[in-house]
Length: 207
Length: 76
Picture: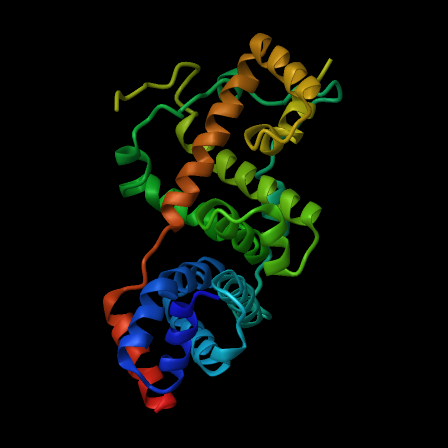
């Protein structure tokens, strides 16, 4: 542990506002985006952040290093958020299956040619991350089971390794890799259904 | 020879450069002759980036203020 980190945790436990501030600026958004990503509720994410930070400050002295603090935060936030979601699970597994690529017996992807070759990847962020497409993307993320969203955020936003994600979510590396791949495939499918249905040569907007 | 299904199965490992050189070379040979798989790879990669950008949120300032207050009331 850097002496800095140890000192911060100790001072925060003693009620030092500056130390709390420093911990919050270091970890606040990481907790929030993971909690929000799993629950898709700002109110739930706020309660989870309160719970996680209170535990962090109370445990303070027990951590052995900054890496230990970060992995503890990811693990506890994931657990608390998944627990909060328990019982609220909707019928998502079947709709996810509908969003995975379909194949012919010979291993070729099935579907109309225009859909199979639709490549919207060069469209600019301004188009894909705002307005109607932003809404489509958010809805698509909402379709994923919460375990998949946890993995997607830990891997693609926080950029943890597959092994670190597995430790955070309490699952095997192979389960993590499967969920991550299925999550990305489902999002890709939903986006392509929206963007690729404009004939075989979708308009490219220069960035 | 890899099929489209084989290629899509290992795309995540391909992007992480976690495939053996032999499998990666097979995959690239398939891509060279398969427009649907090239489109799939390009849009899969773009989807990964978009998902990350959409989820890269910051805790709102008002929430930070409430969290600070919440903690101060409990640790002092």
